[in-house]
Amino acid sequence: MTTHQKTILAGPGGNYTAFVLDDVRTEDRLTLDQQLRRDDPRIEQTCFVSKADKGWHGEMAGSEFSGAPALSLGYLISTWEKCDSVEFSFSGAPQPISVTRNDDTVSSTLFPNVLYKTKESDEGLICIEFPGITYLVDCQPHGKQHDMASYMRNLIARHRLQNNPAVGLIQLEKRGQDITIDPWVWVKNVGSLINETACISGATAVGLIEYEWRGQPDFTIQIGQPCGTPTTVRYIKKTDATIDIQVSSKIVILE
Image (cartoon, rainbow, N blue to C red; front, side, top):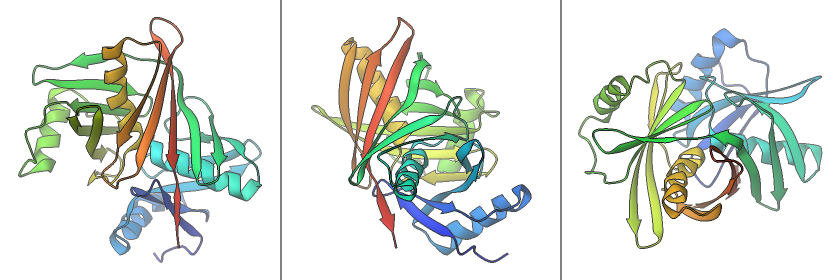
């Protein structure tokens, strides 16, 4: 299989997604994803873009949800449609995603009125389940594991997350009010484990822990990504069990 010509690379200054605009058969998508990531190490995942009567749709290679590709696709669609606000469907998301663009920055309520709960495990990890992806947040990381693949397999088994479409491990570092993250993401259907250079939805999981700790009904936090681009997240309480999670980030298009 040859690399398709209609491919655009975009991401939040890191964690670049290859957006494939050609029509690719479902059974060929995993092979193309592997080829794209092998040929260009900047690519960390692949999203297949289509437009039908119902509008634009983004489908990740593993049918999971991923925040960086969702925001980046919103940026791309807004440039194609020549408008500031767009709405589209995305794999793993239970409702359409709305994105607003202001120059090179996009904002979106990625998780509107989401039912949330945080659960701490015996090993001190905090588990947060979002639609399409689950995160294990390590607030007191003990350094890099010698075999991260085995470590992740064991974590996923212990937390019984084998059937989840994607699982991320977020190791964070906190210095005063500054928080930076080191994300690892496993995608079931792709079989990939990537130490991502940015993780938008992972940043929202980390910020959610701070939101609960602060106890403020309207709370905004900035999370530092490995690539250096910050992610701004706002949490707005809707009910005792639900919140809106709004995200803003710069988006870069690679030539």
